[in-house]
Amino acid sequence: MGVVLRNLQKVVPLRRARLRRDVDTLRHILGIQKFDLGVICVDNRRIQQINSVYRKKDAPTDVLSFPFHEDLRPGKLPCPLHRDELNLGDIFLGVEFVMKQCQEESLDLHGALTAVTAHGICHLLGYRHETEEEWTEMLQRERYILTEYNRLTGRRLEPLMKRPGPDT
Image (cartoon, rainbow, N blue to C red; front, top):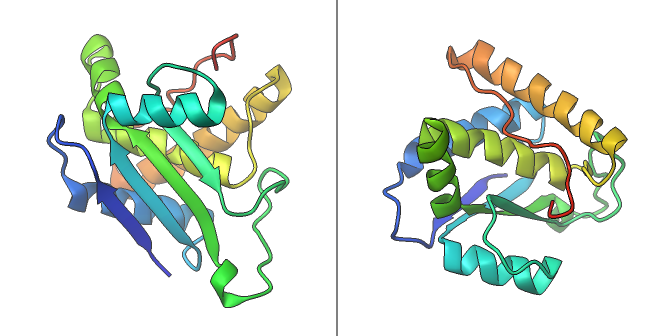
């Protein structure tokens, strides 16, 4: 199975081949290669629209995840009954939003997109961060994923998660 990577924005120059390699590495770490995954790169206008419709938050954000399998327990892989259920879902990356964060915090854009994608995949796998306990569990999972990613690639990525607040 594979990754569908779409770049629907023109604001930020994006190296899709690198992002695809990074997503494939994340999938390998998590053992989810047999599942399809959609990664859609969008600008602030589009991510704000999606955020407004689905989360009732009228603001751009870094990532929105739409799991194919609902109500997964964190860390449990889906058990599809049919071949057409070998899908994790879709992740929308707010590339323009992430670029602005990178400029403010002096971060590498592609590294940040990889960390944000790892966050999105965690959501597809049932992780949430609505409570302090859930936040801690998800942060631990992201740290594990990025530690393995760093070991395999020689890079030094860290989770970009912020503590939960009223707007997260």
